[in-house]
Image 1: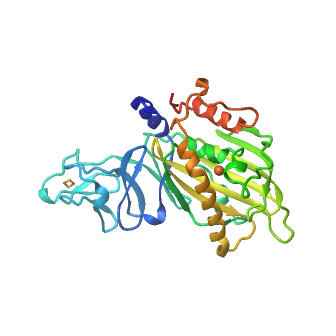
Image 2: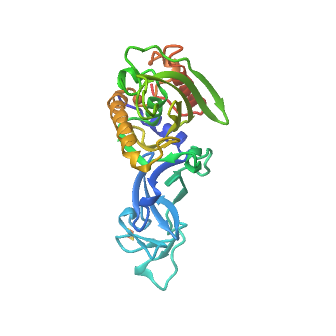
Image 3: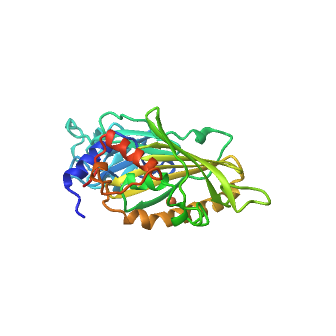
Amino acid sequence: MRVPEDKIEAYYDALSAFWHPVARSADLVESPLGVRLLDRRLVLARLEGEAVAFEDLCRHLGAALSIGDVVEGCHLRCRYHGWSYDRTGRCVDIPARRGRPIPREAKVRRFHTREAYGIVWVCLAGEPQHDIPPFPEYRDEEFHKGPLRTYGPWRASVPRVVMAALDDTHFPWVHPGILGDPSQPDPPEHEVWREDGRLLSTYTMLQPDNDTVASGEDRPALEKVTYTNHLTPTSIRLVKESAAGTYVIWQASSPISWDETLVFSYQARTFDRGADRDPDYERLQDEIQEQDRPVVESQRPWLLPPLSSRMMLYIRPADLPLISYQKWLEELGIPQQL
Ligand code: FES
Ligand code: FE
């Protein structure tokens, strides 16, 4: 199914007002890093200790600055003819023109950049209109945090990826024996509401025994768990309460393009707090992601179709969280695809 160019452009425009994760802070050390966001090539660099994002395009003859060098920790130098840019994006050295003034136009476009949770975030709009997706457990000592991980890129749009984490009625089908039980396909009762510009949903269900829901001896085959999901249009934080304690998955999706999504993810838990246990939790998460991936990548159209089109036949009450999320995107003017 072809996607009209104007729909893609409108989608990029709408998402450009949000902060998006683009790289691990730890990966931004001595060399520049080329990334793609909303189909735009960016170069990231750490200049004078600050993470910066520029258009990945030298103002001289258009070479990619991401294949250049960071010089003395403060300038980004193009590999082609050695033009150097400072952290504001202004050109400060043209080796073939030393001793003469540098043209005023010799600068590259700089985008808003921030660092939070060990991640570099970029907003492409003139002024960011939203906050970085909250992750309160990051600094909460009650929680042990696993390492930052990335998944993908998946061949899917960001809303499809977020909805895969929001939707629980697929658990018995896609994650049998881990998150759901095929003999219990009845959906839980969902409550969905808005708060402080976010969407929240909660539900209680029975989940098969796994490390994230139970601990100790005599674990029952099915454990009662309550999820509370906190959403922004591009992220989800799943907070799961069970006999084991509180287990959190935080996922922020980066729209590399309209049909490619990279997920930055953390796990946090109040129990089983040893870092030596992290690989077991990572394996479980990897398995779940790999079960989701082929299904999500198979979904069409790539961008969500408008609710009014009835191209997706939601059922109530089971799909209430998904309907609410999609309605919310429509209200925020994030375009859909017919
Ligand atoms: Fe970058 Fe010439 S293209 S210095
Ligand atoms: Fe899933």
